[in-house]
Length: 153
Image (spheres, rainbow, N blue to C red):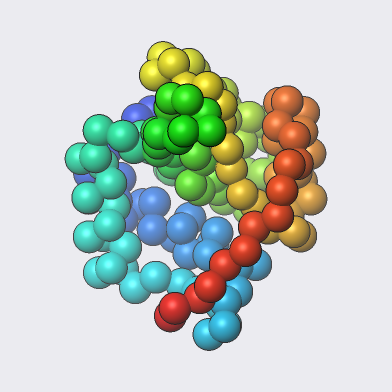
C-alpha cells in the first residue's frame, strides 16, 4: 500500500462521496435517524467548500483510489484571540483503517494549521469511535468538553 496525501480537487467529488456516506452512516444520528446526504446536496456543498479560502480538504490516495478524507476550516475566536482550526470531518475507508492513513491525514491538518498560525485545532467525534479517540489522544488532543446538538432535519 502506497498512501499519498493530496489537496482535494473538484475532480475528486464523486470519489469522496462514498466516504462521506460511510462517515455519516457510522454513528451520527439525530432526531430523524441516521443521516446520509443526497449526492446533489453533497456535491453543491463540496464545490462551495473547495472555493472557500478558510477551508482546506485533503484526500488520501492508494494509487488512484481515494481511501480517506479530512476537511478543516480556519475560524476566528475571541477566546483564542485569533485563528483556530476546526476539523470538520476525518474519514478513512473501513478496509484501509489501522494502516496509518488517518495519521497522514491528521499530519496534513496540523501542518496546514501551523502555516495559518492557528492557536489550536479543535474537533468533535462520536462517543463510540474509540479508534479515532486513540489517534487524537496519541497526537496530543485532549478531551475538554461535551458537544450538544439540535437536529433541524
